[in-house]
Length: 440
Image 1 (cartoon, rainbow, N blue to C red):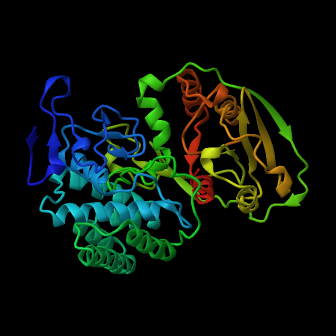
Image 2 (image 1 turned 45 degrees about the horizontal axis):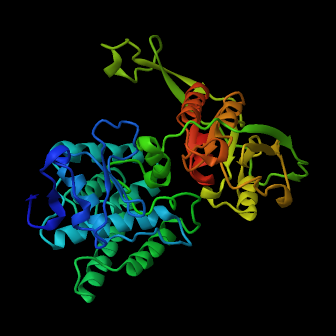
Image 3 (image 1 turned 60 degrees about the vertical axis):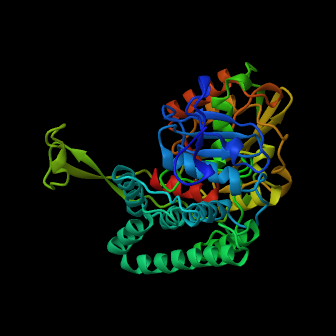
């Protein structure tokens, strides 16, 4: 074995076909074997590092020492089973990443990103601010606690939005001080998971994330990714199915029936308001995109207003989503009145797609009970969605299956093709659904 740095958290294998492979077996207190996947060429991943302690899987780019070290620290200090939470799991994931980073700093091997990585993180943060995704700005910054990119991130927010920057700095300082104090009290490099959960719960309350999200629980533990996609772990179990070839079956998609139930109650939310948008043009009077002159000379802009409210939302109600009838009732009730909403699930070889809201009217609670606990009909459901009025949003945890709820390469390919053809956006919760409709 060879060691990089000052601690066992940097163990790599140097023998045989596994040469250079991270060795989480050396740091996991259970000393169990892991499967490792190099994510260097896996462009489909929402974040380049993930750790599933329950299924003993580690995913990280083999040449990125900072990411590998962070994931090895998850193997050493994180819980095997993702805790049941009464608030949005993303707040816990962000604080958990900060806890892990501070632990590495306390044992003398802090995560130091190079200039290119710092620039990438700041670019992602700037994109969040441009889209006014302030919750994502806060979560991404919390996940960077204990790294050398934290201060540049806070300074960028303070420069672009002074009031929000001051609030963010106070939140970051509080979370960091609480995590360090908790670690000191137990004479450990890291705070306890119970203390982390308490800190995350307060953070979630401040960020308006008091309600539990439908995803994020199938994977035991993972890096939220201050340089990756927020909420990545909610989709990780589907990604793991994709990269595990030995679990890749050939089950066909189940047969789907479409049913319509009585829509007797009015939807409570108002129609989505469309905002004026600007598109590039080669002729005009308002110069807006001078950088495009050498590309396509579309340096001018013209305004374009989208058509008034509408769209289609498809909700996966399989068991992994953990959605109850009351939760579905809340989602349907809060859906904009011009949107069609359908739910789907199945069991065995059959499934049902049920339209539960259309034209400003919605179904009652008794018609929101899922048809089964499996996915089964993801492919035909998404193909149906691709033919419905745009914008089209799929609320799902990202996992797709066929007959008997088995993973299937052919089903995944059909789902991928339907999403591309229909320009379908994926959302994890009702807030992201409404945001996707607004941005369409």
